Amino acid sequence: MIDLLLDPNAWAALVALSALEIVLGIDNVIFISVMVARLPAAQAKRARQIGLALAFVFRIILLFTLTWMMRLTSPIVTILGMEISGRDMILIGGGLFLVAKAVHEMHAEIEARDDQTAGEDEAAPGKAFMWVVSQLALVDLVFSLDSIITAIGMAQQIEIMVAAVVIAMIVMYAASGPVSRFVADHPTTKMLALAFLVLIGVALVADGFDFHIPRAYIYFSMAFAAAVEVVNVIAGRNRRKRRTLRSRGRTGEEA
Image (tube, rainbow, N blue to C red; front, side, top):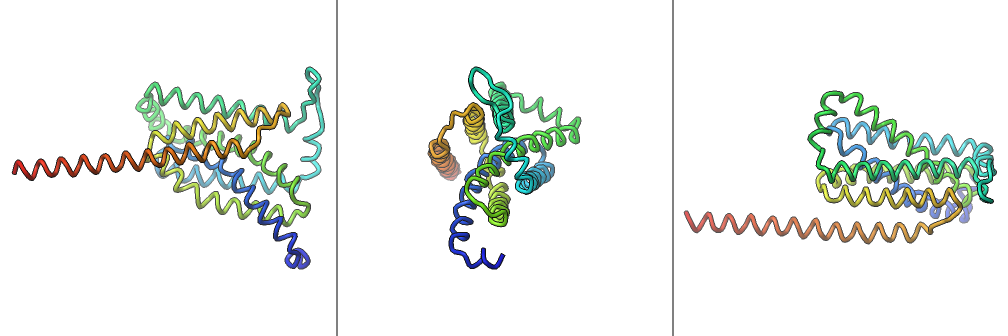
């Protein structure tokens, strides 16, 4: 352990792996933010904390089951000349779930069924809460698997992997609250977040079929779209302020 603390290569690996884990955690934070948006404020906070805790637990458990993780990458079946492993099946299933869930939420937003959903949540708040948590657990497992397999490929020491995961989870926890509040306060950003989830789901399915889409392309697209949305939100806020000032000016003139 002391050798690792004094090894500059170990520190370099920790920084690189921590940065990668934080980037990979963005997907997780977006999904959690979208899923808790429909819950009441108190339940949303608790669901977000549970979702992040599950993400952390899954990542640590998977790190300490490296032998099982290695077996997951071994081919199980061959379909049309393509070898499919256990990891591939999990990524394909998780990706399809993400796409289906995001499209379902988009449909609910387009059809403006918020009032109906709110009524259902009030009628059975405990059921709605457990349903959200169960979905968070499922997607946490998929994202954790992808994250840890990446970590195994980048670092050799389990201590570095655990430290990188802990750092990434602290950053995710700090970012999840502001992201969730922003999504809740600006409904248009929820549609953008759902579009991100469709994109991420398609990338996971592609990975499952051994067609790797460079993550840099995906994250650059997400960052660009998010920047445009932030500018749009700021512009809308400024327009509302100008309208308020004009209405106050007219009221003062009439008085």
